[in-house]
Image (tube, rainbow, N blue to C red; front, side, top):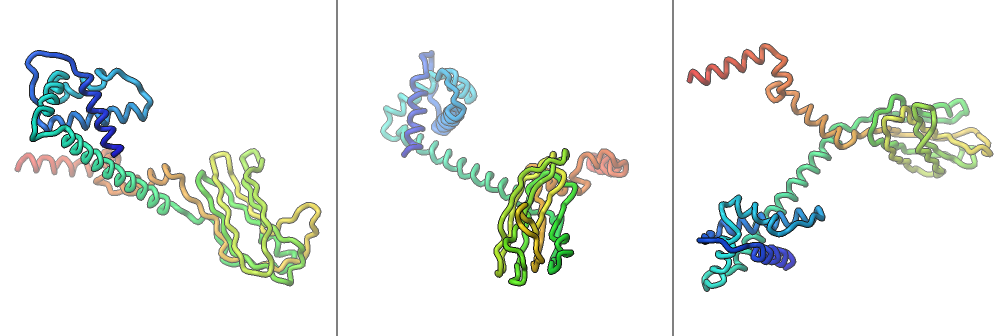
Length: 289
């Protein structure tokens, strides 16, 4: 109903926009539907952009595109009003169905683009650090609970690991801390959490890395200044640092990968003398036939 009212409003605006002219033409229904469609799309665009414009400026170019004048439209609409076999509402319903079909097609295209984005990001997801098992049962082992990932590249990073802190662990409170180090050695995105004891649990943290960051630090044996460090009994499993390319970069990389086939890559074709000869032979052969 709302869509019908919008289309009706456009139709009313068209009627108001027309002016008198000699020898008006009767516009076929199919062409009139096209005019109404384009007028509705123009109105929707201007409304979305918050652009105000005189109605004549909106519709006159649309009329001319199909070879008609404003008077032709006025004349045709008046003729439709006089006919019993044809109603303006039928034309507006046809326009509404057309617009609905276009909206569905656009939604499908958006869905396809979103799918491409997701495929691209999955394709260019990389595990940049991994350790399947870390056990720390002595003070000397605690160095293994400190991980530094160097030479970061921009993207979304996820740090995950499973852990179990045994009852033999002598620390009162167990913590893990994660942060990013910038090129000037300053730290950002610092995150600290208490680790649960005496049960299997998991740690997950996501970070956004940009070009100013160079290192990621993970300390799975972190203590506050007033804490006393005691003998640990910690088991870490499935430690992973995973990087996902930014969406735009991932899609671009996916396209470049798909263009790796020489026949679809103009730059490679231009830089390959053999390929150019093959093209020339193909063209000459086609002309000969």
